Image 1 (spheres, rainbow, N blue to C red):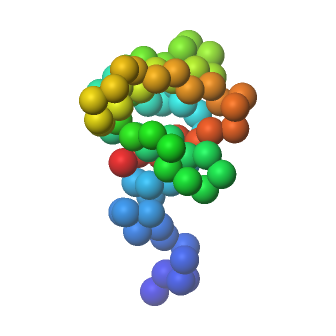
Image 2 (spheres, helix red, strand yellow):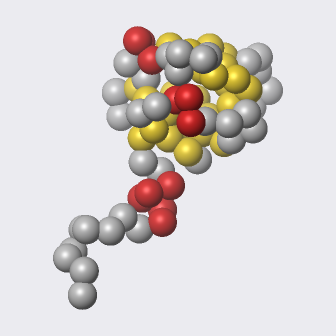
Image 3 (cartoon, helix red, strand yellow):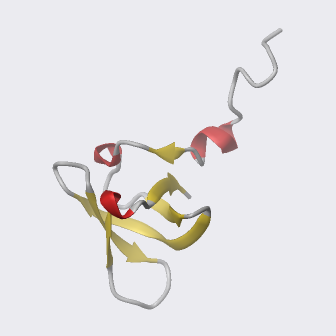
Length: 78
């Protein structure tokens, strides 16, 4: 039997914060989190080669958004 908490559930693993944004692919659905609140959600349009900048096409009717890792935002798959 595995130790309690040793294995993440599929949901928890899926919703874990992504530290290296370069691993994200265009079209992936993500949520942008700042100070423990979801501030945006949508599809990844592009990630910079450095992995510090992410362009997001929001789920709602608005223009694409730019997020910088240096602004303290986090990304997780939706």
